[in-house]
Length: 180
Image 1 (cartoon, one colour):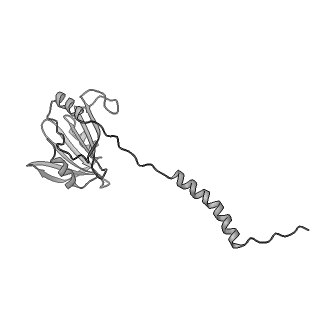
Image 2 (cartoon, one colour):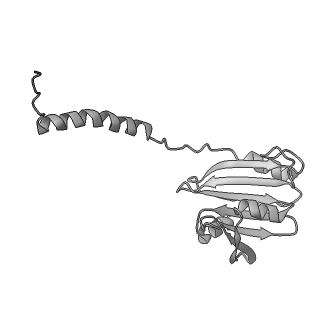
């Protein structure tokens, strides 16, 4: 007849459970780490200089932004040249993007053709949401369907400008006042 084993004590059971759980917790912590994404700053002034030399419209860009703002996108695409999707650009297009001190992206898009397409794309299919008056100029407000992204749009005879971001209208208006 086989000898019967004594039942483990509570401290022995706790040691066994800890021996199993500690590696599981360590593995979870190791694989659940998400590194903080680092934004790559870009030199946007040369892109703007090229746009100003080639664009048939007055190019608007922010002036005197604080050093705490980081340019992370700068692209000039002349009409007919391949865009991001490698299709010919519908119009002459300038795209700038900045991270504010809170690391929130603000986009500035300007194009001289297909204003409705630019507005649709830059506002994430937003709907009209009133108007802002900046420097005596009307800017139309847009908000995305999920109420996250807001945009200011100014359409003129030469081009359409869209400022967009996941910010209140007042922050976008403050950014718009830096354009020149």
